[in-house]
Image (cartoon, rainbow, N blue to C red; front, side, top):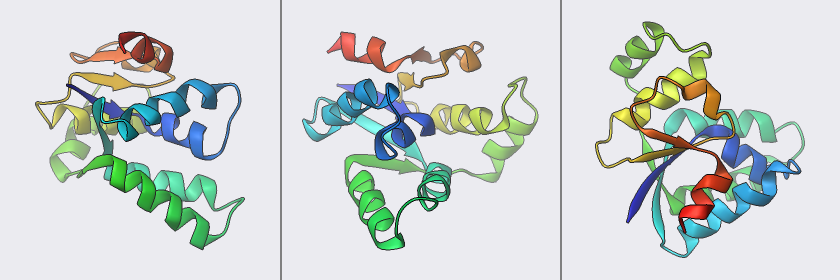
Amino acid sequence: MKHIFLDTNIVIDVLSERKPFSVSSSKILTLAAENKAIFYLSTISYQIINYVLKKGDSRKNIIALLLELESMTIALDVTGAIIKQALNSNFGDFEDAIQYYCAMSNSKIDTIVTRNVKDYKASSIDVLSPDEVLAMF
């Protein structure tokens, strides 16, 4: 079974229905519902997703979406050590660095799925686009 870390942009694409990105990203989340892979998400992603969605939806609807997401994924804590690693990294984007080191904190994770593969060029974990992940299945 594959253990896949979801970059925040994958979830935001689905929940905010950002076309054309949401098409492949929605299929990724379907894999979780079908128990074809185990998906992980950083705890900071929940805050980012809430922030993005609250501009266009009610708190009640957003919480319902986040609860559904939580039931399909395993939340990984963002620790002080992860923040320190991210701050001292060569990542061009701080949030991507946090996501990367959060994924690295769990030895079971073998893939990061993101729409921004180029942002993870120094990764020691496979980093794939949604279409590349779907091709594995």
